[in-house]
Image 1 (cartoon, rainbow, N blue to C red):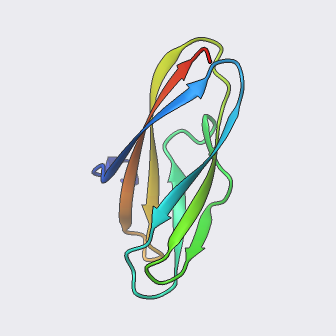
Image 2 (image 1 turned 180 degrees about the vertical axis):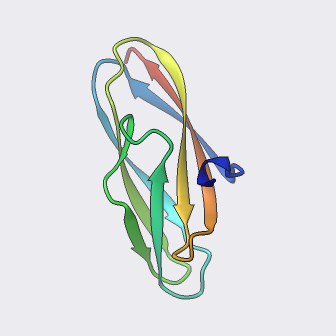
Length: 103
């Protein structure tokens, strides 16, 4: 299943306790033509993707909009963002190590 991706990138992300946080993540396309990527979140209610698809130009840098849900107490969570090619193959599996802390 698509949940069994191999991690290709890892981000450590500090997040504030007690509030939602919107984040933008840059993504480098490795394709020589414009490509529409499908995005999936391992935790769709806690790591909400602003859009399910993103079109990025040839070898261009795109951005993904992500909203992280509210956590009441400091904790660590691991999320995965799956970037799929239109044919359904996983191009990247991005691991996000979220550290919720009092800021």
